[in-house]
Amino acid sequence: MDGKILITVGRQIGSGGLQVARKVADHFGIELYDKNLLMITARESGIAQEFFAMQDERPSALGRFARFLGIGGPVYADSGEYSDVGNLSGDNLFSLQSKVINRIADNGSGVFVGRCADYVLRDRPELFSVFITANEEYRIGKVMERENLTKEEARRFIESSERKRAAYYNYYTFKKWGDSSSYNLCLDSSLFGIESAASLIADLYEKFRR
Picture 1 (cartoon, helix red, strand yellow):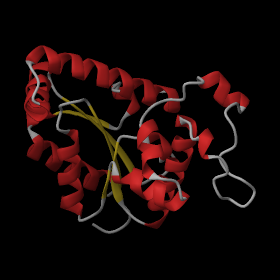
Picture 2 (cartoon, one colour; picture 1 turned 60 degrees about the horizontal axis):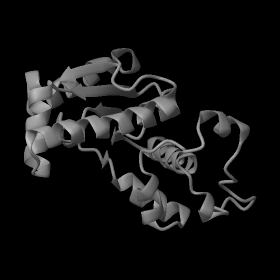
Picture 3 (cartoon, rainbow, N blue to C red; picture 1 turned 45 degrees about the vertical axis):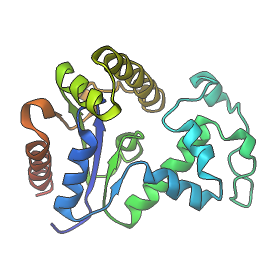
C-alpha cells in the first residue's frame, strides 16, 4: 500500500487487542508501538525509563483543573531539555510521549496501541482508530490463562485495570474510553477471532484510503 499508514488500537483487557494490532502491523510491514514508546521517550528525553514506567497510562494526581492552571512545574527549560525530573507527573509524561508519537507519525507509518494515540493523532487524515472488545467470559478466560488467576481474581483484575485505563483515556482526550463514538471502528474479537479481526481492519483501512 502506498503512502503513510497510521492506525491506533484501543482495547479491553483480555480482548487480544495487542495481538490484533501486531498482526495488522505485520500485514502492512510497519512498526508496532506499545510499551516500546516508553523506551523511545526515555531515550529521547534523557530520563531513566523507570520514571516513565511509574506513571505509564495514569492521569495526573493533581486533576484536570490544575493542569489548565499550569500547576505541577515546568516540563522543559528554554534549552528544550527536561528541567526537573521531580516534576515528572502523568501530565508531563503524556506531553513527552505525545511528542514522540507525533514525531514518529511525521516520519513514517505505525500501529499505535493505547496511550491515547487516537487523540494525539486526531488531525491527521491518514488516521484510522480502532477499538477491540470481547465478551466478558472470553476476556476472563484469557486473563486467567495469561496471569495464572482464578476466575474471580481475573474478574477483579479486569475491573481494576479497566478503571485505570478508562480514567487515563477520559482525562486526556475528553472522550469516553470504549464508547463507539470515540473510534472509527469497534470490533468484537470473541466473535471474529484475532486473525479475522486483524484482516478486517487491514481490509477496511485499505478501502478507507482509496
